[in-house]
View 1 (cartoon, one colour):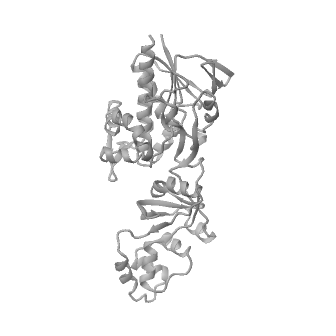
View 2: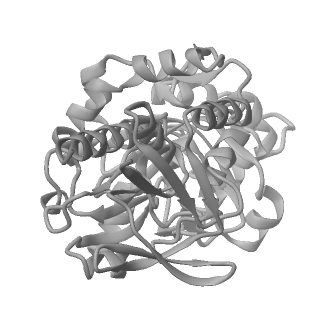
View 3: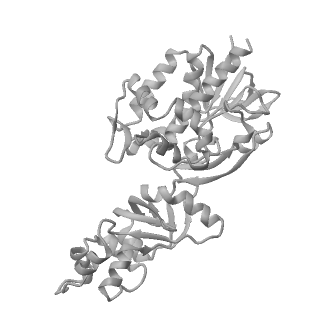
Length: 400
């Protein structure tokens, strides 16, 4: 009986294993950690954002330069198919006010447990604490608790993740071993990560941990809306993650992006100026800003970071609508939500199989693509994993 090894037990790897096992291929999953899908479980702590409900063409456009490469896989297993799949596992989903899709219980663990039960029923076997060291003579070499061993399979699917949150299992250590078998990669870089800002000590002491809600953020004129949190080292949160890849690329190119925060995106400069022109009375300036402009203490502190407040109401209103932010970097891979860069598409065929290593397929975040937060990353991991697993099964059956 033909057998396939899936290496990596995140969403892409488990999807590949399901595709293989459903096709009748004996499937083994190898995972370096002590349990599967640790990063998936971590993502679910804040309410697992599986996918997005927007129009499919707009959804596809979120993948930027990789959209055409990913399109066939997302058309086969996109947002609607992912929601149907969750329902089959007894995990109904719903669309939130932002258009994002979540499990009704907001958790990853019930979905993962149901999925693992299904894989067990399909005969999938798991081998935990197995770290891929590389390949030699068409065989995979692993480090396990008992030492180094080499094992042989009829097909391999690699779903080793990127390099973000390495303590959860994906550290990018596969780059050099894969280069030896003809799979080259663009550099792994942080994506969907926080901004590094050199706050003043008073800002850190008074505001670290405080949110900035319902703000606008612009990078060289391109705007996003949402919220973020002030940290001791900068800013974290959804609206920041939406712009972090662009900012990181600009900074790496030694360009200085024009980054600005709109603290009152739903109010015009003129309306704010009129409110700020009212008599202050006995209010402190901070209290006056709280009442007249509806700015909380964290927003006022952010304004103070730029120096003295303008005395003229119109100038102050303009500042509130466009606070310059001196970003000196983006957070590293150890805190990034996801990774940009990875195995180049030209080394793979249309079925995600290596051109240099027939029978070896690649899926998930280790491919050279990136996506914003909002469920796009997970959807493409599910889609490419399933596509790689099904393609590997077809390849094996053609070989007899």
